[in-house]
Length: 365
Image (cartoon, rainbow, N blue to C red; front, side):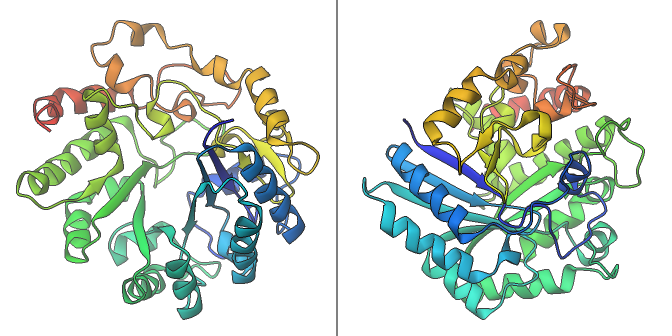
C-alpha cells in the first residue's frame, strides 16, 4: 500500500474535436474495441471505493480522454460524493482533469474551483498555429473557444496550466508562442513532443517533429525560460524543472524521465486497467477494477514484463555522458512498433545537443 495515482478515461476515446495528431485516436484504432463508451457511475464508485481502501497518505484522480468532460458535470459531482463517503482513512485527495475546454461553462468553472481541481487545458500557441492541427469535427479552428474558456478560468480562479503539443509548427515558432504565453500570463507550461501513428516511420506528416527540429526547439525554449527565471519572472516548465531536480538529486516526477516505466493505473471507461496512457492496447491489459481489487492489480502489474522490459538501455546509452540526465527517455520514443523491442530514443540527438548547450546554465539553479 502506498500513495496511489490513477489516470481515468471516463469518455474513453470519444472527443468533440478532431485534432490531426491525436495519439489516443491512433491507440484506439489499434485495439479490438475502439471506444468503451461512457463510464457508468457504478464503475466510478467502485474505483473510488477500492482506491481509497488501498492507498496510503494520498490518492490522485486524474481524468483524461478522449475528452473527459463529455460524461457531464454530474459525473464529477458523484466523484466528490464518493470521495467523501469512502475516505475512511482521511487521505489527502488530489483531483485533476485534462481538457480541450470546449464544453466548459460558468457552472463547470465554479465546480472546478470549488472542488480544487487542477486543470490542464490544451493549446498549441497563437491562433494561426493552434488552428492548423487542433480543429473541430467540422474542421473549424478551436483557438477562440479555448481562449474563452481560459477567461472563465481566470474569472472563477480555476487553477490551470497550458499543455502544448510540440509539432513542427510549434517548434519553428516557439519564440512567438512563448511571447504570446507571456502576454497572457500563462506561467505554468508543459510541452510534449508530437507522436506519429503507431508502426509508421516517424517524420512523415506535416505536423511531425524531427530530432533536429526538436533539439533546436529545446534550445530556443530554454533560452527564453532561462532569461525570465534569471530576471526574477517565474515560469514553470515541467521538463526543465525536472532536469534541474535531477541535477540536484531529486527523483523526477515525470515518468518519462525516471529511467524506466512506472505503472500509471490507466482505467478505461469499462473499468479495464492498463500500465500506461500510450499502451492502452489489448495485449497490455492488466485486469478490470470491477472484478479485482487494487491489491490484485498491483500484483499483476509487478508480474508483467512491462517495467522489466523498459530497464534495458541501448548500448550507446551506457557510455553516454548524459545518461544520468536523459536516462533513455520515454519508452514510447524507443518503441516504434509498440512491440516491446526497445531501441535508441528517437530524440537522442535532440537531448545530446540540448544538454551540451544548456548544462552550464542548468547547474546554476
